[in-house]
Length: 260
Ligand SMILES: [Fe+2]
Image 1 (cartoon, rainbow, N blue to C red):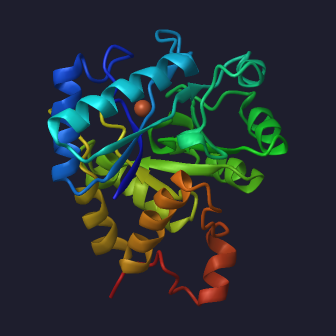
Image 2 (cartoon, helix red, strand yellow):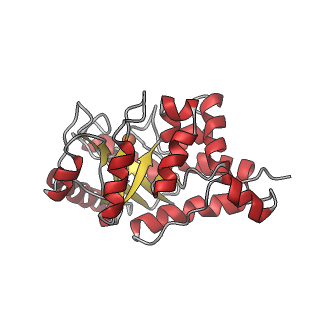
C-alpha cells in the first residue's frame, strides 16, 4: 500500500519526536503492508514552519537510516500546507512541496471552518497545473455540517483525502458514518494515515481498507488503493462525479453502494 499523508519525519512538527520514533513508525508501516510513505510535515499552520529544503534533507537522512536498519520502506517528500495568505507566492518561491514531486498538493483547512479563500486558492492552483488534495475534510466542522461545502471544491477540481482512523471508526462512529457518506457521495478519492506516532495516531491503513471493503465493496477498495499509487506516480487520479450523476449511470448500484 501507498500512504500519501504522514508525520514520520522527526523534529518537524507534532509527529515523530526523534529518529528512534521515526524508525519505530516505519516498522509499523511496513508491518501494516505499506511500501511507500509520503512524509508531509505541517507547514504554516500557525505553529510549525517547514520549508521545502528542510523536508527534502530530512527525507534523505531518514531513508539512509532506514536502509541502515534494513527496512525497505521508501519515504518520499511532501508537505501538509495550511491555507494561508502567502501560499501562492511561497509556491512560486519554491518553499512549498507537492506530494512526491507530483502535480498533487496537500492542503489543510482549519478544523473549525472552510476558509473564505479556499475556492479561490484551489482555483488558482488548478490554473497553475496543480491538483489540490484536501486533507481530512471529514474532520472539518463546516463540511460535517454541510458536505456540499466539500462537493463544491471537488467540482472545482480538488480531491478529498480521508483519514484512515476516521474510516476505521477509531475517532468515533459519527466520524466513521460521515466518512462513508462522503465515499458514497464520491466527494473523497484517497485514504491516508495522517500517522503521527505509534500509539494514538498510528498508520492503520489496512484496518481502514478492511472497512471500505466490507461497507462499500471491493471496487471502492481498488479505487482508493489505485488513487494513492497514481498520486505518487503523478498519473491522473480516478474521479467520479458526485453521487447523483453516478447513480443515474449505474442504477443505484454504483461502486459505492452498500453490498448486499
Ligand atoms: Fe496531517
